[in-house]
Image 1 (cartoon, one colour):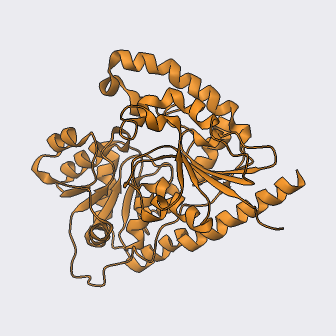
Image 2 (cartoon, one colour):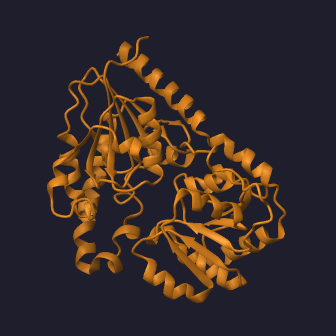
Image 3 (tube, rainbow, N blue to C red):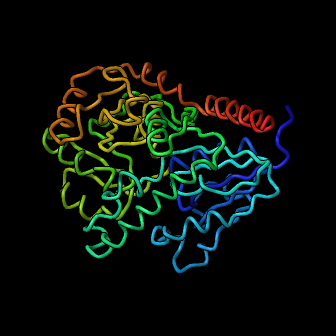
Length: 373
């Protein structure tokens, strides 16, 4: 059947180049003429591929300090999303982990949602984002009913999506649980051409590495405590509000690098004894980037890590998220001799080429179903 005449892409917000934005960048490559609609943007924080698009923001963009403190405007997101106009489009592609899966599309259009996760704040991760320590007692109590209302809206608007695409089997189960909808799993794209092993195997750092935003739900304190328990050095690349607390916890045994370039990150992956993932990820791009460089991964055996890390072959899966279990996994990693070529071969399952083929197949199928509808 002929392709759609006009395509629009919708993304929650453009305030940094994280895993969701790497998926967005790949979708932009598939639909080079499609504009991007987003709730709020911070100019210069995403790749040139994304920045070069026609980007249309919601009214949230005009609110005070919106690009830096957009989460304070969460209660306004439903209204902002529903005000986007897609009357002139035949295909709308949303990449959503918050609200944009709930856009209102015209009746003849097809809406494909690449879902990174149902809205975490509203469903099962409220304490990780809005605990009393983070927003105060009053803020915590005020936000609870607001997030409950957002959860009801999130569930009620799931029918606005024609086809869900999940970024992992773990997220597919969440989509089924919260939306009562099926989905097709298409793993996110990792640039396995750029992320590759260091050709000089003599350069190796015996320490462990964490690459992460420094925020509570990443549970970096578990990695720090586990490394301290076994006496292993740890390097952390990333930044975020948790840095002062984590620096105090880590002391001199932990090196904080802040933000690092992609080239430096590739070098860190290639040298590290292993990359650590102490929190539960819906998918997790970092473990796959590390494995593409031939680096093993130590992760909690829950969530997306169970789909990207093969225990004993490409890394080690901890029995649970406790410090003791994670320390045991680090010790097992130390005792294991890994085949770095086998680790990289496993990472090739998540290449950009496989993402493009899988995603386009879903879109074609959705358009065919939409034409019959």
